[in-house]
Each structure stands twice: as C-alpha cells, then as structure tokens.
Image (tube, rainbow, N blue to C red):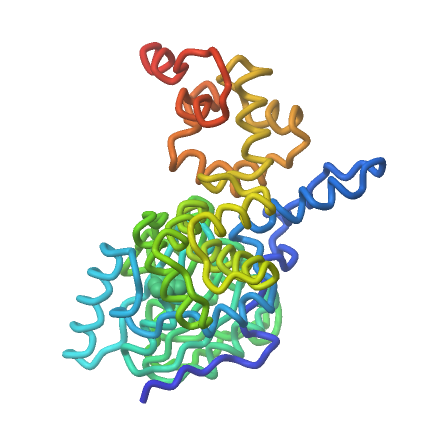
Length: 389
Ligand code: ADE
C-alpha cells in the first residue's frame, strides 16, 4: 500500500511563519525598513525580496508544492549522497521487515526535507504523518499523535529544534523503546502509566542543527544534511516542473531560472511561476533565456539570485566597513535588517557562493562579491585575515 495520509488540518503542514512555541526562539521580526514616506518603492522592495526567501512559504504555496513533489527516490533530482544513504536504509529495512531508523534531516529551508520524508513513506509503503514543532506546544498534542501511530508509520516533525522541553522528553522513551509514558496526577501523587507504541520512524527536520539538544540529536540513528543544489540539478527541476505545469521552457530559459534560484528548488519553482505569468501576459508562447531574464529583472532578482537586501548587505560591508571584518550586530544596525534574518536567511547562500566569509573577527566581503557588484577597491580581506589567524 502506498497511501500517504496526513493528519487533520490542525496538525497538517504548518507554516514556518507560525509563532515560536519556545521563548528562546523569538519569531523572526518582520522587516523594519517601513518608513511611511515612500510606501510604493518600499512595498515593491519587500515583495521582491520575499520571492527569494525559501523559508517564507504560504499555506497556498505549500499546497501547490504537493502537486510538484517527486514521489519516488528515482524521480527526486539532486542530493545524491543523501539518496544513496536512504536507498540502502530502505532496502535493508525492507529485507528485515523492520521500520526505518529515526532520521534527522537538516539544512537550509526549501531544499526538500518534507518531500524526502514523504518519499521514504512511499518507498516503505507506510503512512506519513506530518506536523511541526509549533503545533506541539501542549503535552496532549504529542500524546495524541503518538497514540494514533500505526506500525511502521513515519512521523515527520518539522522545525524540531523548536520543540518545547516537555514534548521533547516525551519523545525520548517513544523513540528509544517505543513507549509512551503518561504522567497522571501531580507532584507526590503523580503516577506514570506506560503504553506500548508500535514501531515507527521519526523524521525530524531542522534548519538549525546546532539548536537541537544533545539527548534528542543522539536518538536519531541517521543524521543527514541536505545541501544547496547545483545549477544543472535546478535546471532539471525547472524543466520537470514546467512539464507538470504545461509550460514551454527552452533549455536556456530553464538555466536562467536555475541560476537565480539560490540553490533552492522552492525558489526555482516560484521563479518559474513568476516567469510564466510574465510570458503569458506578454503573449510569448514559450520561455527562452532572454524572456526569463527580462521577467526576473522586473522582480529585481539579479543573475546570481541576489536581491536588494543581499546587495545592501554586501555593499554596506564593502563601503562602510572597508570590507570587514564586521560583527553581525553592527551590520544589522547599519542596514536596518534584523540580525536573525541576516544570519538565517541571507548569509547561508552568500557563504555558499563565496561572497561572504565568516572569520573569528566577523564577516568579511570577498573580492568575488565586489566584482559582481561592480565595486572598486578592497583587497581580498579574507586572505589577509586568514594569514593573521
Ligand atoms: N521539485 C522540488 N524539488 C525537487 C527535486 N529535488 N526533484 C524533483 N522535483 C523537485
């Protein structure tokens, strides 16, 4: 049976924009740059930058994503190492007629962690129940989910680093011994009742592996990282999605979109839809390289997928801080961006493409970034600083 069942809507895929359950993890602040004087350009700018933010996905977009998801490992493009590891785990579990080991997937948003959990369920012929840490605030939330598990089920918990401590502690015996310990009563009179659970597989997903507690991390048999996709992999993803959406895209058009997608399928598919709108309105029968470029210029997405905030961050570092090193707080204060947004949304991709480096003294802009932005001067400070380390 290859059925994939979801929990009722109150537990089903939950937006990453939900408020944090954990006081240590404040919800991301909305952009602060909203001075009233120039409403139109500011509004456009913030719309533009959201196109490239993989962690922002509306419920509607997540529902649309469902129809674009690959449903087998064979169909899944990219993440070769991860697929290799999971393929072996699946085959071994099937031969032994066991459930899969608990799996922790980590990496930037939009790279396909949920998709991979659904594929695992499909390949194993079991159900996948999807939830996210912010929906597990109360102990009864996690009790309810665990008690409804069936043998072999995959339980996917997104943003697992945000689980409240009490929920996390309920998971320990559940993961280790497939046992649910329910505390009845309080204080001295409290009793623990244990219920046997069927063997199941917990798939946890996180963008912040460093925020996971050691006891939770240690209970996963497999810990796997998802990496940013290469342009050729994203090109194939764009072509696959275009086929599903019945949109004609030339190979050059697909490459143009892939190059601007920040290594992230969610962004690639989002850009494809925007470019498709543009082509339709302008009356083009298919999307070629120049149509894709023209469309993305409108959205202020540059040829490497940088938006105005990326450019602002790099330019500020280059011009106001002489290339760096600059601390995160100073950069946040100078640009008006939230420090968590800089660190979690913008930096990972700028680090990946080698436009920014982290040194013990702070962030440094690289010569490649200066060249891309057409900024003069500045030596490659990273080289000089690494000599000093
Ligand atoms: N759509 C989104 N991500 C994908 C992937 N990795 N492979 C195929 N199609 C996708």
